[in-house]
Image 1 (cartoon, rainbow, N blue to C red):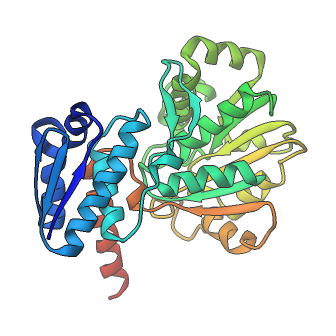
Image 2: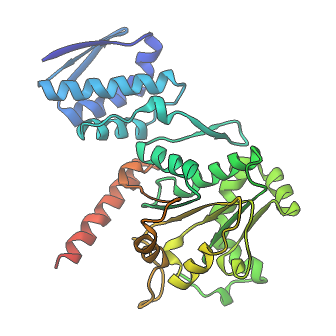
Image 3: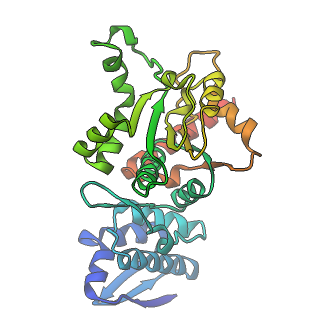
Length: 319
């Protein structure tokens, strides 16, 4: 089968083909097709199903480019994965901007899983997000928190995570208590500084509008009118998770993120995240979102590493 498709401009063709036709080579390898072009006219040759899938990838990359998005290797690989599964990434929808970073860069969803995650945050009081590293669980939650804060939907942002000792003892780290727990909270600091700029972030911390603290600091408090994010929740105990969930006050929204394949709790300790998913799945106003390796937006090698670990764990558990 031979199919002719056409881009709007030669610049669009160049953007979609990529440097040294890198993106097209990915498509040719994935679908076993031959792709050539003459200006805006693109020809795809191969068997019927493969040509249609490659054509679908082009359609989605054109949509991505027309939305003003950069066509990255990750975006191409994701479009290919979706086409192979008979699905569409629906870039027209996922290009909605969540917020603008301090450097003027729009923060947007890059996969259907991420869009579903953001939609759940918009429509529920509590969202539990479970997925592997690199799926944007924490970053998108922080973006939603900053957006709500800027719109004055909440008066403060509270970010927390359990300070679980994974191989090192807190007591051996230098400094006072705050300095000892800072390394655990660094990813949250970085995400907020990226969204707000370091000076604005510091200003809001001094005013008390932003708080980043270990989970233990949440005990005994009621958190009203706040956007609360509990990160690395797989390392909470059931008691800690219950304590945290019962802190939520009026006018607050809460996002809980975690990766159940990276539990650092001592042997014999149950994960509060895994238990919460079982207990709370049918509660109205609380949504559970599962992100997968197809939602990873870091280097493509990360996706392959996670897939290899999943395969290894599956074989080990089946013995």
